[in-house]
Length: 258
Ligand SMILES: C[S@@+](CC[C@H](N)C(=O)[O-])C[C@H]1O[C@@H](n2cnc3c(N)ncnc32)[C@H](O)[C@@H]1O
Image (cartoon, rainbow, N blue to C red; front, side, top):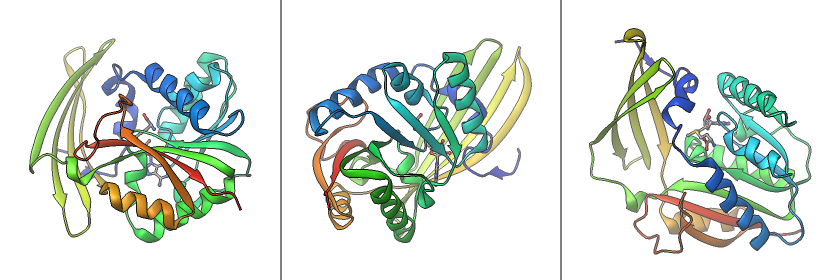
């Protein structure tokens, strides 16, 4: 087995195979609904932090939004640009670390979907992210994001596996998650096996370290960073259900205007 790779260094290339059934259209409809419900005015400029392969961004651009996507992975950004080119829509994608945003201001809303925020591990880095965000979104702008809830964790070690196929490629992904309570970090170890027409073409492991939060902890961070928490609900499905022990939480916060 290969050495343990940095998160997404190789997984990025197979991301859209693994998540091909993920309903990005439904999720974008939900996002647009939230922009309309909570943004005062018409939301137009959207910044996507940790955009991955740009799936949300292409759909949002098709629906008329002006989108900028950033991601720290070069492969993810290359795949996003290719997706944008194929769609015929103009979207700016840049390799950038969300902890050190280098953008001009003026976004109505920022999104950070599917747990991208969790990859920011230290308090210091989180502070730096929020500082950047305050500079680039408009006063009263929204931050819509997902985070993983510590009270929704499954007992460790939690093991699962997936098999996904696209054209001639078949990807097997095995995972084991363990929670490190001292650091408040969920360690997910992924092992991938990739076949092309039954021939082994790739085999690697990645460690994904993801910070998890309690609902109260996240509320208090947002407040300290100058945001009003408008709503927290079940992530992905966007259901108005109790979220206390939901693993995936969707949060909507508003930058308090200066
Ligand atoms: C689980 S993927 C989510 C991608 C996308 N938002 C989606 O919904 O499919 C997490 C993404 O966050 C990116 N990421 C992790 N840490 C980052 C950082 N510090 N700055 C920017 N992107 C980061 C990863 O490269 C990866 O593309």
